Amino acid sequence: MRVSRKAAKTQQAIKEEDMQVQIVERSSAIDVAKEEAARIERALNASVRLPADAEKYRLEKVAQAEKKRIILEAEAQAEAERVKGEADAYAIGIKTVAEAKQLQKKAAAYDEFGDAARAEMTLSTLPKVAEEVGTAIYDGLEEIKLISTGNGDVGVAKVTGEVLDVIKSITKLTSNITGVQVFEGEPTRQENQKGR
Image (tube, rainbow, N blue to C red; front, side, top):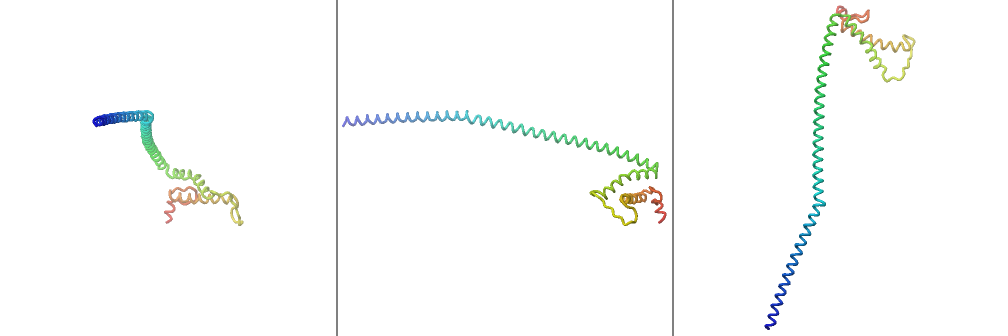
């Protein structure tokens, strides 16, 4: 039994040594697996993550530059519009002053020349009035058919007469307002007031 006990102890020692060898082998295999995982991680970083981070950084810089460009363009546009607005306001101010001076000179001239100036002003507007009246009456007409009953003007004279009648009534109104007799035979404002 001694031999068998000794053999059993030896057998147990061999098993323990085998277990130790297996533990060392497994530990080595784990270390190798960890090293392999670390190597794969490094390869992944080098091939995927670092380029992705670099691309992300590049895109962020491009976006920042674009944002800055847009802001600078907007600021430049706003400044240009502000300067244009100031220039326009200045030009309007200068033009208004010039127009006011021109009106003062016209008023002084009209005062100096009295009825003649008012008559000249009225007469100078008649061609424009005739154009506006003719346009208002005949705008959009493609053709005019004239029918005569045998009394009065016929044809183009009738059409022209209508425009002249409107102008005549406008000049009468102007004479009444300004006191200037534009056409002979029309009563002026003063004459109308005396007749009342």
